[in-house]
Length: 193
Image 1 (cartoon, helix red, strand yellow):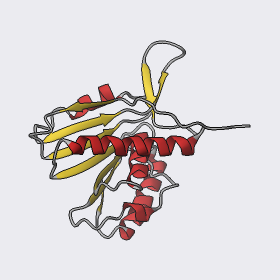
Image 2 (cartoon, rainbow, N blue to C red):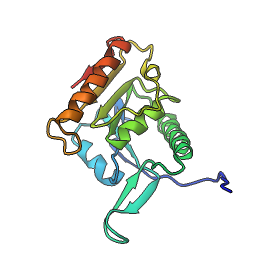
Image 3 (cartoon, rainbow, N blue to C red):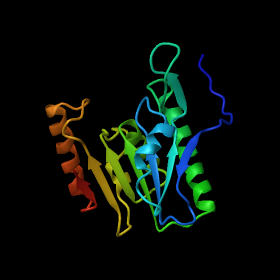
Image 4 (cartoon, rainbow, N blue to C red):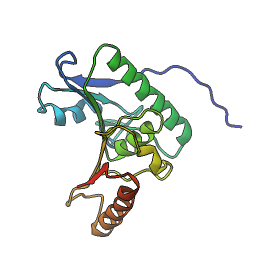
């Protein structure tokens, strides 16, 4: 018989920039098999107007065998619902911590690959109006209306590179078709790139 027990866990995140000088808080959620400490480096040239926060997925594992490089994951199919809830709660706690010491003009979340699905799920309980989903499939368990916000400056960006190794030409067309259908439901707050 399967049972669960809730206990505290220590989560890891990395930051770059000075929150006292920054106008924008940018949460960057890495993809499958990446670590936040490496992922954050891709955003360090944005300038001092950005305070970058890179949370790390709670599941770390060896990328090849049982030693060597380590990566992290936000969730797998095993105990999926519990992992989604735990991640949503951890990201919301992190956001409260960041905002307790700073006041930003705007908050933005960028989710890359698996981090995009994580960002969409997080948005269902804690709306950040400005979202970027990069090389990410929108999670089927999240209703499209959860992306809609009343903020007039709200923007959602869905970006997919033309040479993405994980999306062939057919998959790219399917994804863009899906996002274009979503665009009509999101009242012009969606930009497809």
